[in-house]
Structure formats: C-alpha cells, structure tokens
Length: 156
Image (tube, rainbow, N blue to C red; front, side):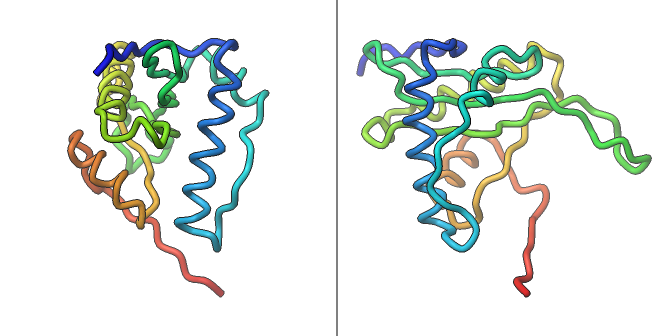
C-alpha cells in the first residue's frame, strides 16, 4: 500500500470534494430514501469550511489523488444550565472513495480528526451516523466511538 498523506484541503481540492460528496449523498439516499436524496454540495459551503478558523476539511492523499476526507468543526456544550460546559469537536462528514475503502483510510482520517480536536483543546469528538449505515457504525466503534444519544422519529 502506498503512503497515505493527511492534510488540510485547499480550494484546489474542491472538485475532488464535490465528487466525494456526490458519492456520500448517493449512499445516504440509498440508505434512507424517505428523507435523503442525491445532491451536490454547495461550493460556497466548501470554500467557507476550507477557510474557517473553527473547522477543517482533512483530506487523505493516495498517489496524488484525494482518496477521502473528513470535515471537522469545533463545538461547545449547549448554553443550558443542565449541561456541563465542555469544548468538543464534531465530525460533520467522512467519506472514502468506494474503490479505496477497506485500506484503513477512514481510520487514518478519524485519527487525524481526533488529533485536530486535541490541538484545539477539545475534550471529546462526536458525530451522527445513519442508524442503518452498518459499515460506518462498525468503523466508528472500532475507533472508540460509542452511543450516547438516540434520535428517534415518528412519521405522521
């Protein structure tokens, strides 16, 4: 296996990010077609995340190609008296090219996201995952994530 390099994305990577978001949104739509659909990610959103002081898009480079990315952002406890005030990081999105999956790239991106969070003084990292995304759930559990809350829905 070639050497995977993890680094922050720049605007030159936006086309690759668009392709990866198409893959992610297609997979999500297949898992939950009643609430999610295939879409393109907004280019302004990507530029804002690339330049944000409190977020980063970390990309995995394999043989000069973007093999995947992780979008991570600083977060804080809600301003309610019942919450213990804590600084955290939130993984908004993680995707690895279909043909690159199973090579440890997702784990490398998660590790880089955790290190990013530690450098910013975060106490923990959290994320949300579709309840029926078994592959992603296994990846996250292998990397130390555990269930803390459940989101439930009642269709009307």
